[in-house]
Every structure is written in structure tokens, then in C-alpha cells.
Length: 132
Image (tube, rainbow, N blue to C red; front, top):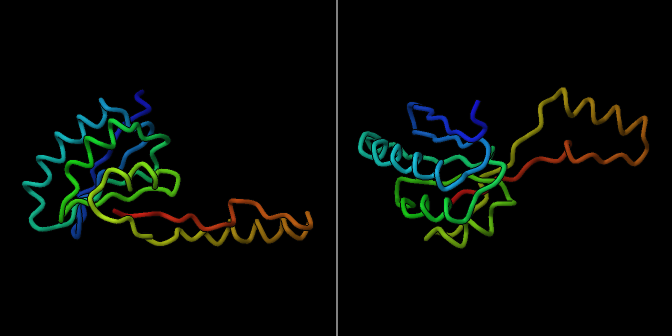
């Protein structure tokens, strides 16, 4: 089973390419071919390349994808990918919001902080995502 792949989510308001695993140059080539088709059939909908679940982004792969950064193509990524993506894309990166933790995780964290005084686990913190 391939660990590095992408999914296409055809939503009413947008097309979203979700990248899982390492965004290598080979995977970027496959995404670029799919992007060329998607941009022709998007019908005015925005197209997103979602790198939030990418474990690593190779600079060459990011450069291939950045060539498509235009009015209708947006990239969504984690904060650790910000320096690379901001250096390649023609627009300025902006925060895309934070991902709230589910109620069960917040409750579990509260219980852990009662038992272990001073416990401040990273899973309680919201994750910030960026968009270009």
C-alpha cells in the first residue's frame, strides 16, 4: 500500500486535493496533471491543495505546485511548512484559522491536568493552519 498519495474531494463549493504522506516530486507530477484537468472543469469554484496531512514537503515538489498558484488555486498547510511555501508562492501567507479540539479530548486533558498538576499537553493546543 502506498504511503504517499492524494485524494480529490469534489465539494459543491470547491475542489480540494488532500495530500497524505511525503509530497515528493513524483507525487507532485501526478497532482499537477490532475490540477490541469481540475482547473478546466472547476467552473469558477476555488481549488485547494491541502498539505495539512503531509508529513514532509520536498522543495522541488512545492516549486512544481507553486507554478499553479493563481486566483483560483489556494494552498492550505501547517505552520511547519510556512517558510517553504511562503518563499515559493506569489501571495502572502495568511492564517486560515485554528482547528479546535473535539470535546472528548478537551475533557480528557482537563482530567489529566487535575491528576498531574501542571500538565500542559500539546494535544490541548489548537493547531494553526496557513493559506496562500
